[in-house]
Image (tube, rainbow, N blue to C red):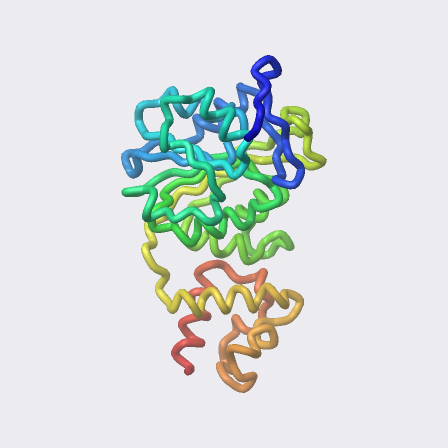
Amino acid sequence: MFFISIEMGVVKAKKYLGQHFLTDKNIAEKIVDSLSCTDQYKQILEVGPGMGILSDYLLQRSAYQTYLIDVDQESIAYLQEKYPQLGDHLIHGDFLELDFKKKFFDKLGVIGNFPYNISSQILFKILEHRDQVVEVVGMFQKEVAQRCVEKPGSKEYGILSVFLQAYYHVEYLFTVKAGVFSPPPKVLSAVIRLRRNEIDRLDCDEKLFGQVVRAGFNQRRKTLRNALSSLIKKEDLKDVSLLELRAERLSVHDFVKLTQLISASR
């Protein structure tokens, strides 16, 4: 059992969990205000609430039901004292292991000051549940945030960029300095917003699309004809100019088109 110091009123940030607690209330409110709160969803899940600086603003809103999930037992004990009204909306567990379909009856939004050590895993988890997760507003290491919004032709553009932009409109909202966290991270942070686009399914074999994107960027210095040698024979698709480019030059639309061509050649 964890003892929470009521006098101190704090939860200790744990390095192994990648915790850096936001302390600036103005930024916390700005993050929560970045939710569009459309009628597309009525449930919000906050990941890694810590001591509840975002939760305070989320729970002031009646447009949606707020859920909190944290793997840290100390945070859970603190939040149970702070928000006794939450009941089973306060979840002690690992977001990466959460069964969305069992816990949430419909579409939802996800928000959080995400632990930087698993931020990419969090985004891939959201992609797995893109049919339910309509919107995401999150704090990330600035480098990861930039990778999410980057366009073709940049060194930062990669697997995560393509997958996210295939299914979401991705926006870089604002940069956050290290001094507003406890403890301060050694990097700048940034808040981005993902809004589900109108595409239910890509116009190609989505499994093959994933293989093409991953293979292309796993050997990003090679042309796609060489990088995709496990998926196509070198003599195939000789007239396909996209194969003479490197992966970082292709847009989502280009990757869909290339996937269609590879699929048709089999």
